[in-house]
Image (cartoon, rainbow, N blue to C red; front, side, top):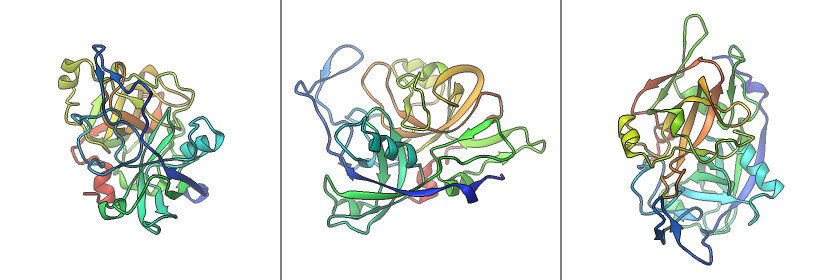
Length: 291
């Protein structure tokens, strides 16, 4: 595919490893109104990484590996800058603390709290602490597919886009993208209506167990590429028949109604141009050799 990669700007963005949060009343209410004390977002999650299951953890909105942001106020403009410019596949480097010099890769974006999720080798995570600074070589926003003006691309490093194995039709009117699963648009929940899909994520709802089984979503893994059917993410997130989007599963399932595994979108079209090609190897852990 022809892109404008040679014109896509690369900038430094930097944040700190965030601390896990809880309220004064620490209960998370599930879909039945029952309270649970569970791990949630933030921090260094030692035993959950991309490639691991997105379902079944004793937690809520679990973010794999390392979660970073800038300030405690998620709505600070610099936090928005970090969340907008950092893209999946960008190189990251620890620039303070005992793990200084360790290198990792951005694996997802989590909206609302504006966390950027970064994977590092386990031995490097053992040296890290909350508050350590991470610098990201941010590149990806502004990326275009020159022969497909109806398709918008965002939140993905240009080099990773090339590695996805996207196939063009002979008429150059369709793009076939390898994905692990197809998610019907009626299952998309929290995040619908956001004014920008170039930040954060939105969730696959998991309250309807029969629908999850029907569409083979119980085996989703963190880092899976998925096709969101009838979902437009051009300027925000909504349901449009015939539209299609590609995303990466960024965080785990959730117990809260209307929530579930979060999907950071990387490609979208209002028209029927993007087509899914089902393959179980469609996970960014395979491209980054994370194990």
